[in-house]
Length: 78
Image (cartoon, rainbow, N blue to C red):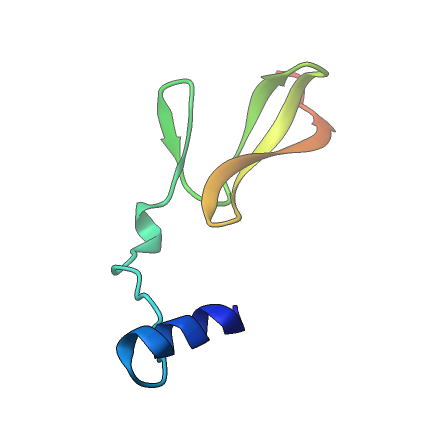
């Protein structure tokens, strides 16, 4: 990375400055999970079919993306 800054300094004729990109405004209320044609809020738990059989899954944030976190718990019998 330092060689890039030196290159930039040589190209611009002065010291290179680093600028941080600002992400546009983000409303966490716009985040949700989807399953079976429905929307679920963060923290909601539902039963999802998996290769290991039906398991409880919780809607949660994982690496800035809403996704289902599959738990090892089997779904309760109805």
